[in-house]
Each structure stands twice: as structure tokens, then as C-alpha cells.
Image (cartoon, rainbow over all chains, first blue to last red; front, side):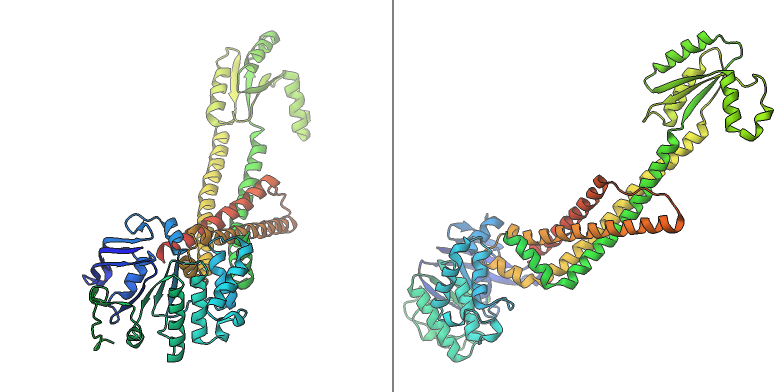
Length: 234
Length: 282
């Protein structure tokens, strides 16, 4: 489903510094994977490569049959319709209500208008925000805003949810709520790839964990049946 | 059409910026329109003067009328010639008397030579053609002298060419300025919505879908700017007529529509460049 083969990424402006070095990994259907590691370790770069916002300098990234080596701009749009993407800063449109933000994802992909209200209501119910459908982002708490972002990511029925520090801006209670939501999404069959600094969250579950440092995979729990100690990492 | 709706929402959300765009487009097209109007009037004036271009061949005294008539028939067959008039000595005198009324007493007797007045067709009044036809007419033995205002025709044509070249150059410069201004205003609109654009891309909108409302917005601004410019040009012309008592022609419907279409094209081009640059960058 997602395959990285010997992927390296060098940003020309950052000198010789490699954001990723020879990364090889596979994410299977319906899997839940944590990406951990310090800032600048390459977590976000991996996620960006999955939604083809970045292309590798070397190697090949394959997502749902598309290869980073020959994917066309049009196909990138098609691929993204099958992915759900969530960020730390929510990225909601402030001048639209929760349901309008969710509907936006359907409107811009040319979904049939008649289906939009039902799909939006279903997604908002899934994230537990049906009662706040007409609220604007600034009327919602951080956790609620992130739920709107999740509803927007889920409304197109993605096969994988890519979440870049989704709990980074949230307090502990909201974090637990969002994590619970992610587990539910995953239980319903959607793969989840989540970059996080929150080791407590990682330890509280037995999901696969990939740890990155200086652009290299230094640990993958799929290769080591016994959970490594992750102490000492921020 | 959702793209049209988005374009109109953009107008409503940023009325000031939209008004600014339309006004700048209108002013650049207004400058273009003013110049166009000057060019149009120069051309009209030149055409009127041009119609008077003719070759007058003076006939030697004593040439039989039949010979002159035969020559006139021959000359009439030249592809460049529209008509040939035979002016006898008596007619020349009569003409001189009417044209120079106050000196009519001085004219007596048949001292003015007879002539062949040759008129040329439209599009054959350029100096080279006039000179060639004049030389052919001159080649006839009974032609004493020939007048066709060589100097005058050359000057007239030079003026027309200068007006044409200057018009094209200035027009292009104005058009380029207008495109840049439209590009800049659309760029402001694009930047104001860059967050929306980045989210659109993330959820899988195609570039064409993102571009479309901006192109429509640009085209609408171009058309509105064009209409405003047309109005301004018209008002400017009326003022010129009123205060300077200057008889001027205005653009006909066809030229006016071309102007508005040109505005729309500039709007489209400016938007396309702006949005394209933004989409390539993000």
C-alpha cells in the first residue's frame, strides 16, 4: 500500500544535509504506525512524500500504485482524494462553519452536490461533532477544531490517514480524545500514519512504532518483537 | 457553475481590492483608448486627404481630341486607375474661374492647357504606384508635363506610417502595463486566498479547478474595466468636442467590442500568469 525503497531527500538549499537517508519501509493495509523522533528527524518529510508534496532525491515512493518517479500533477490530486491529511495547526477556513469546512473537501473534488450533505453529516457524527456543525472554527475548542479537520480528512473515505503531530497543539484531555478517535478510525479499517512527539501516547498502545533520527530509521518495532525502551527521546 | 460563484464571492469578499483592480484596468485601457481614438482620427483624416490624390497630365496644344480620348480609354484600363477625366482648355478655364473667384476677370482666352485627370483606386495611392502610373502617362508624346504632388504624397504616407508604428508600439506598451497591473491585483487576491488554495490542494483539487475562479475573476474584471474605459474615452471625446470644437469620430461597435474583448484577454492573461506562478511555488 505504501512503500519507500532506499529513499533519500537532500534539500539543495540546506547544503549537504540529508533530510532522509536510505529509508526503506512498508505500511500495510489497515495498519497503525507511529513515527517518532526529535524535531528535524525526517518525520514530516516522510509524510509529505506520502501525499507527494515532496519527491525523493533518490529512491522511489509508491502509494496506492502511484510512483513518485513518474506521477503527474493530475494524479497527485487524484491520489490525495484517497488520503486523509491532518496537521498540528488544523488548517481550517476561518470564514466557514464546521460543516462548510468538511463539505469544502467534497466540493473542490467535484463530488455530486446531492451527496454532500449526507456525507458531511456522517463524517461529523463519526468525530462526535454533529451538534456543532454550524459553529465557526473560532467558536470551537482546539480539540473540536482538530475533530473538524479529522472529519474533513475522513469525508472522502481515505484508505490511509496521514496525521502530522495532530495532538501537538492540544491539552492532555483533548489529546486522549483525539487518540481515541484515531483508534476508532483505524478499527474501522483505515490505516493511520501518525507523526508525534508524545511518547506517552506511543507507550500507551502496542501499535507499530518507527523511530527516526537524522533522517534514518533507527528503530522499527515491526523488526523487533520486543518493545525497545524509548527513554531519552523528547 | 461553482467557479462562477466562487469568482463572485471573491468580488464580494474584497470589494475594495476588486474596485481597485477594475479601476486600474480601466485606466490602462483608457490610455490605450485615447491613443486609439487619436490614431483612428488621424487615419480617417488621412483617408479623406488621400481620396484627393490624382495625377494631372497636361496636354500639348494642338493635340486632336480623338487622340486624347483614345489615350484616356487606354489609361482607364490600368488596374490601378479608377477614372480618367478629360479636361479641355475651356473646362480648365471655367474651373480656374470658379476656384479662384475673385480673380475671374484676369482669365481670358484659352491659355490654360487641356489635361487628363487620372484618379486612382483605393489601396493604389502609395507613392511608388502613383509615380509608376505617372511615368506611364508621361510616356505619351502629347503629354507636356505631369503633376502628382510627389513630395506631398511621400510626406503623407510617411506621416501615416509613423502614426501606425507609434500606435502599435504605444498600444503594446500600454497593454503590457495593463497585464502587469492585472497580474499584480490578481496576485493580491491569490495571496489573500493562499491558505484556501493550499487546503484545496491537500484535499485533492486539481490545478485547473483552483485556477478557474481566478481566471473568471480576471476576465470579469477585464470586461468591467474595458466598459469603464470605453465610458471614460467617450466622455473625454465629448469634452474635446465641446471645448475645442473638434469634430472627432468614435469607435464603432466592432472596435468597441474588440476593446472590451481585449480587456477580457488581458484580465485572463494577467490572472493566468499570477495563479500559475503561485501554483508552481506552493
